[in-house]
Length: 267
Image (cartoon, rainbow, N blue to C red; front, side):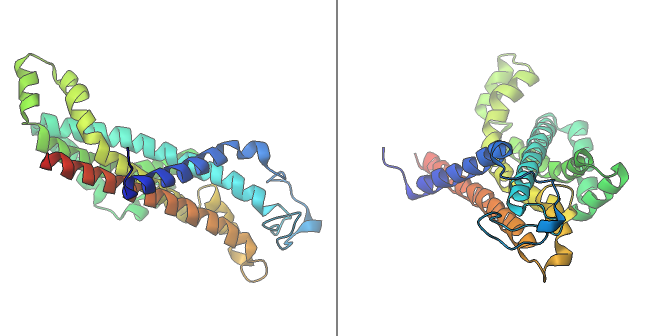
């Protein structure tokens, strides 16, 4: 079977994304130095054979800290995306399928959350919950779930009157069975694309809020951009490459799914 250019591109980007995730998972076992150990005698050393990315103002190895920070940032981003994917999709599907008061209440909540700029809302929620990784992740969950709720609801509204849904109702199938057996499988594909794109967005949001991982490193390195620029350059490159890979992967998956949908309609 000959693969199209879009499928080859998606496969290559999937491999890159897997390498990033796998590398983040095993980095704890291959760190050349302790990322938290300070040594003022080795402070602000430029990149060399001993320290590939140099050292920071406290003598910590920047390469080890980039690996450690990448792991924390990526794990947190994947966790946030998984949580908002499940919660937002379920709420949107229930709202679209049930309609009436249930739909009105859920959509009112969505409108309330979307009434504020997303970054401002994340900062406000984080400020109310307090500092910490878990609270930072919860603040981002409060921002991103509405996208999945609105998208899944709109998809359900398009299919709720389909023949196979009507047939299932006539056969006496319960709403829960119809939702999990017929509705959810048909709304997952577009949501997966959104999730792939959101991984990069969540990582950038965490970096912007300086909650953890690469964001903390870049925040700490601001005062040393002129004297030791490598302290911020390498974490920034790691952040840039990770976001680019996941964003391109999302675009590639969307292109493949769109072409498959067009082919299905033509046939």
